[in-house]
Image (cartoon, rainbow, N blue to C red; front, side, top):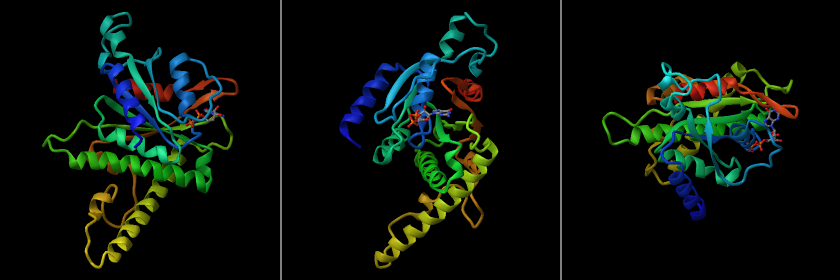
Length: 264
Ligand code: GDP
C-alpha cells in the first residue's frame, strides 16, 4: 500500500469526525464515482474513471429516514444529525484494489460496504469474473476480520450492499440474476483459490504452512457458496438494483438510499 494513500486516508478519516462511513468498492467503470457525485450534489456530472480515493460528506435525502431516528421528525436536530454520513469512494482499478481491502481491516467508522457493479457487465464472462473475484476478496477480508477478532463478543457487523447499477441499460440483468450469477461465480473463485493453495502447499515439500480453512470463504463442504452464509460472520448481503444516471439526468437509486437509511 503506497504511503501517500495511507496518509491521505488518515487525513480524510480525521476530518470526517466520526461520521458513519460507507465504503464504495467494486470494479472500475461500475459507477462508484458517478454515485459519489450524485450523493454530493444531487446531479450526475460526467465522470472520469476514478484513480484516487475520494471522501465526501452527504445527507440522506428525503423521504428516506435513518433507522436510528424513526420516531423523530425532520427539523429535530438529532434527526438532522443522523442523516449525515460519509461516502468513501475507492479506486477500482487493478493494484489499487488492495487499498480498499486494507481499509476494511480497520473499519473504525465503517457502517457498511457498498459494492457497485455494472449489471450489464455481469452478463459477460470477463465482467462477471472480475466482479466475483473482487467481491470474494471483500467478503473474505470481512470474514478474517471476524474470525481474527480478539473480543469474545465479535466485532460490530458490517453489512454489504451489492448495488447493481446501470439498470437503465436494456442489457442489464435484473438484481435477482446479478445475485445468483455472482454467487455461482464466487463458488468457482473459492474452489480455484483452494486448489491453488493446495498446489502451492504440495510444492513446499509437504510442509503446509498456509491455513487453508482461513482462506475458505463461507461454509465448508462440497456445497456452493451463497450470500446467506455470510450471516454466520454477522454480515448480511443485499443485492439491490438501481441506476445512477438516466441519459444525462439523475436516475433512480432509491433502493440504495433506503438501504443506507437502514444502517444509519
Ligand atoms: P467507477 O470507475 O466505478 O468510479 O465508475 P464511474 O462512476 O466513473 O462510471 C463509469 C461510467 O459509467 C461513466 O461513463 C458513467 O457515466 C457511467 N454510468 C454510471 N452510472 C450509470 C448508470 O446508472 N447508467 C448508465 N447507463 N451509465 C452509468
